[in-house]
Length: 281
Image 1: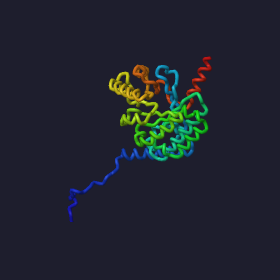
Image 2: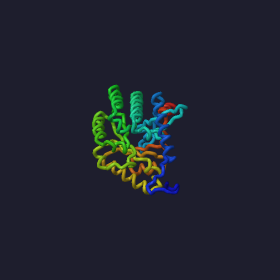
Image 3: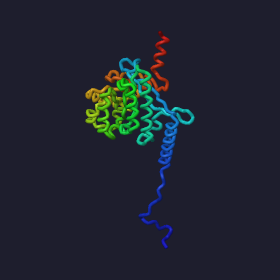
Image 4: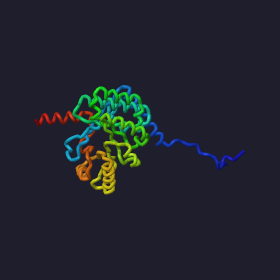
């Protein structure tokens, strides 16, 4: 009988899951459950954030509609807290459908604004999402000219051929497309020529503290030059202070978005602006 001290060289210690991995998986399951229940019970709404003209920051060029869900206590949960858990599955497609439906309804009720709505490239092949878009355009054909669809850089690269064909079809109907989080991924610049995005939104990682960070200044200047070469409108994300805004204006960025100019709000900011103007008048 082998000794109890005998341990063959090929003996393998039993594997135990990392407590961090287990906690992350539990958090993911909780997020999926929360999103599914919110969608089933229609506890969802859009929060709107202004995207202002760089040289006339009191004027909004358009608003971004950001998906929010309400948990069972009524607390508002931003997309960053759940989107990674659902983006690649059926719940992600349902979120895109609902965001588009609410965005189209907003545009139909408020003809004075332009609105951007986030989507995944995966939703292009999702029948319910396409049906939602077609219904909205049929109901109000002019909506297409005021609708901007935002696709993240990483999402666009998953299926570039599908994205380019879809964009060409929809641009003929007046819809604009924004490449979100530009610079954060690994897009081959040759794809920019093929994609024909109308707008690029420069990722906030490069925007924060651009007034004091020389590396960020160089990188953003390069991204602005690339966008200008391809005749694309530029938006700087995550602009939070006056100095960063000043530097971005000097660099020739077209629009600015961030807490400096307004946080996302579930109240419709264009109505608040109209109310302020009426009181002044």
